[in-house]
Amino acid sequence: MFYYLSQFPAWLAEKGHNQWADLFSPMNVFQYSTFRSAGAAVTALFFCWWLGPRVIQWWRRIARQEYEDQARSQGDMDDGESKRNIPTMGGLLIVGSIDISALLWAQWNPLVTLTLLSMLVFCLLGFYDDYCKITEQNSRGLSEKVKLVVQFLLAGFIAVYLWRLEETRVLITEVMVPFLKNPVLVGPSETAVWSLAAVVGIIVTVLAIVGSSNAVNLADGLDGLAIGSTLIVSLVFYVFTFIAGNVEIANELYVPYVRGAVELSVICAAMIGAGLGFLWFNCYPARVFMGDTGSLALGGGLGIMAVLIHQPFVLVIAGGIFVIEALSVIVQRYWFKWTRMQTGEGSRVFLMAPLHHHFQKKGWHENQVVMRFYILGILFAVLALATLKLR
Image (cartoon, rainbow, N blue to C red; front, side):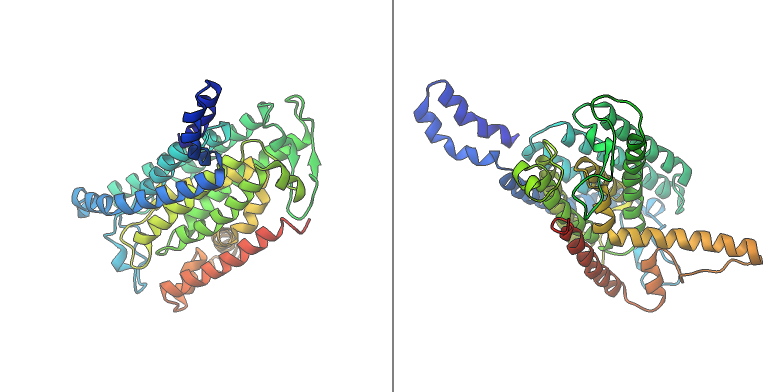
């Protein structure tokens, strides 16, 4: 909305009202994405700060003990019992703040619309999952198969939509990898014709979106861990979206230019502001959890933006913490199944998965785990940013 105020002085000048145009010329500042990004971050931050206490009090008032999320207890862990009666579904606060900020500060285009609508779908999926956990008083919620089906359907729709649309087809038919200037696989971009590049591009797109969404969800197990790690990755993608949307900088750094991608930097900034605001209430000891409502939406949003700026593999580097968390679960699960098939008794690689619980079992305090994961997350972020120059 604010972007369109920057057009007002030009409109006045076009109508011959030069004096009024000079008077309203300060509105021109709204045309700069950097200024609007700062505004989006501050707006989302203050919305979280303002709504946070009210949402927490409201939830505690209407959600009696039988409707509290019991899934957060970690059994015999020292701090597990204290997490039993903490409200969840805090992701509504995050996604709501991001959407409000985007409505106010972003210049709407198909990339912005696709990102926000997809985040909303992931948010609703997570909300229903959290609601099932609360009302059924267990940690299962929706079945894993149902969630994966919905996620793959949404990701598949996004991939095919981008491929079918002439303006965005190149995002699918050209497969980019970090540290290289040129695509490793190129297909025809003039018409929507099936090719090896298109098939690979669609698969990469789907895996990036679904994988990112689930990886953030798996990291949401300790106070501040998932949201803090998401903040770090969001900062990286703020830089990448800004560069991808600026033709001169993109060409200088050999980054694929994507028209309109600079507006995704406004969403990244809103994500940073909302994340900081939520971390205020989610840091140890947490007063609210984001739940699947927030983790699926944030992870899915990052995956979609990575695809829209032609950098899905950069997300693997920047989100290294999420990748490690997801791999720990995969390794633990399938090693247990394999050893049980071979010996009749399953064995484990980690004391507990995801990985952050393994270190808790080893005696690390929750804050130690979170802060050390933050440090690793920053190192991964630096490595991701280094791909801009190492090409």
